[in-house]
Length: 213
Image 1 (cartoon, rainbow, N blue to C red):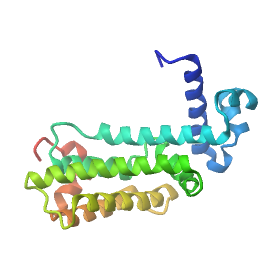
Image 2: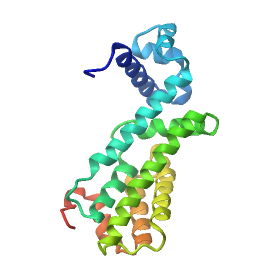
Image 3: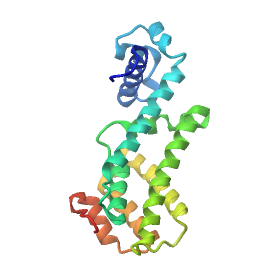
Image 4: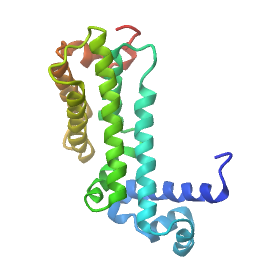
């Protein structure tokens, strides 16, 4: 955290503590007292850095959203074909549960129904996900690899919505990651007018996503 002020470092530590508590205890368990205990501070001292529990929660969710988008970015390479990029993003978005970012986002999603700032964070995340998919679809269409049955923006939003719903099943333990990946990959292939076998193979075996494939 070089270059950050001591205050900003402390704020990030508090937000990270809120993430840890929410991932472990759920949104209901992420109380001010629990977050303060996690970061090793008194509750009133935490409020010196944030004005309220809601502000801490929003910071924690924003950090989780940023981490989720980082995972999508880390999954792709510049030398990948549109099909390989699509497979990588589906894999990272639908089954990338190697950290707590997705769980925290789902824990707090209902809060966006009442909290304007939380709604803004969730909307920004959704819009960014959609843009990532839309750019891949557009590139693939221009390259003659995809044959979309709907406008790229509609397909992109549909894929994000399906991820949002199906990933909940993975987090709840009612569906496996492989099952969800097959559903999302098969849907993407159908909407893009391509054979599903190659896409599904690259989703499940990303090491085979060679340049130009």
